[in-house]
Image: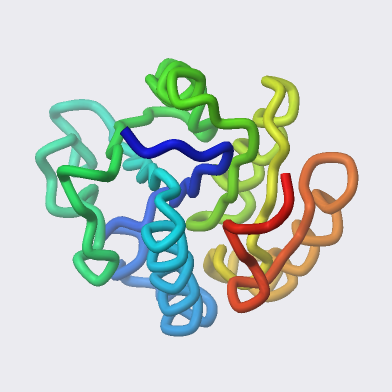
Length: 181
């Protein structure tokens, strides 16, 4: 088993969100940054967790739906990585994540993925309450424009709001899983 106090959590980078009718803000660079984080995690023997958001079995977002499958560019390794299903914005609610992190002795969670104002935000707020130091990779999470705000405004707002009380911010290029404990 991989031994590290860090874990990388990639949230909802799945077909229906990332490759859906509305393109995520800076999709190519966010995906590139997430792939860089995955590469760095694997080099440092840090466990990588992938969350998949699904809906009811009779919906277009069932576990079997192509819309909820993780995007292939991330090259999920079924032998090393942990892929888990969630049905709520928090990656912790009614999932195996907290138990799996505890079993591995994880103390710090590095977060990337989609969507900034929903699942990324909720998980970043929940993690410290569960005792995890939390790092949000500021250039490795994304969303789409909505009726009120452009995606870049949503992302910038969440980076500013979450930094300090909930997370430490870092960029994908600057982040190292080898940093001091």
